[in-house]
Length: 97
Figure 1 (spheres, rainbow, N blue to C red):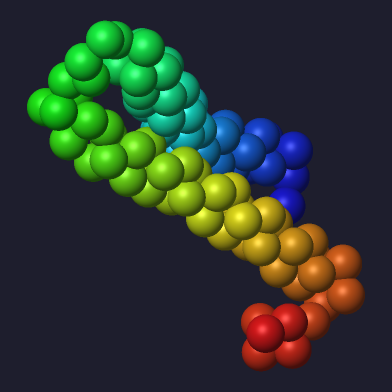
Figure 2 (figure 1 turned 30 degrees about the vertical axis):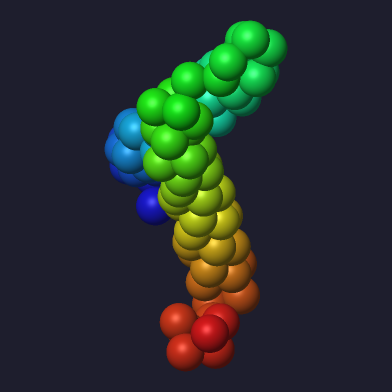
């Protein structure tokens, strides 16, 4: 494998990692915004029930996108470990599994 093909492979891997990373950031922002809205809603003299009803789905969406981001990160790490093991030891993909 020459240097040019490894740099293009690395570039394509980085571009495919950016979307889940952004989704993770958005999910974290949704969770933080939901928490802030819940705090503001709890401090009102009479908390709004519509806002309280919308908070649970917002938190589920935020946590779901964070979990997707974590899963994609673990998948990328696992793929990198398999690729490194096959390049160094000459092991086949059946040996690594």
